Image (cartoon, rainbow, N blue to C red; front, side, top):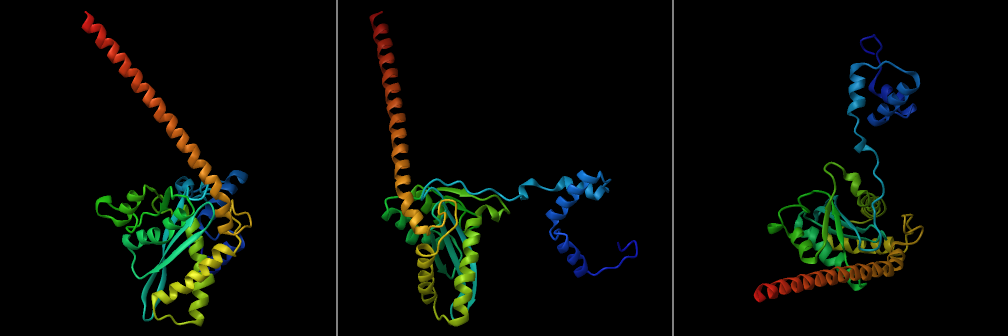
Length: 283
């Protein structure tokens, strides 16, 4: 447009984009692609390259597959801010992807020790008290979650508890969107409200109020998740306990069947070896 002598301000360009619902690059590419298919437009070289480079991986991802409480717990780190007399404050978040029951703890550090501490102090005891286990953890690839198991407290904790670890794809935070949404809710409904009305002198004081809000979130605030369907997270969790235990029984039965088959195979092989050994000795 500038080459044609048409001058327009950046805000004017953005106003046109907004009116036509093409304010983001992916939306502009989609609009261009639709126009090409409808009007048989001839594209410039740069437009062709842009369309070819558009990655389908940027499309929204489907919902996380989860089947019962404890099947998959998502964990994330969220920066809360700098509080006077406290310092930098970080939030460790863990959410059961089936029931949406949330666990959160405030820290003044961001490392593997605090990431493991949330699981040790809050998450694993909660599941064990209800007769369940955490089967798998989903995290991003931050250094607080990923490193060599020989020297990494978080990896050591997972190995000790027999918890499998799934990591998101690089530069794909949407994969762990369940934690991202909770972190946003925590900031909007708790942090922003509290910090406007109260000054905290310690992390522990801040945590006490956070625990009260978390109890409200889990036990009173209804959720529209796939399995919640308008119920509270804690109600969804308790309703799913029998489902999880049935899975454990089914899995244990399968394991016993496999072990029985293996034992029968080994005994058959031994009988065959001893029979051949006896025939050789007779000769």
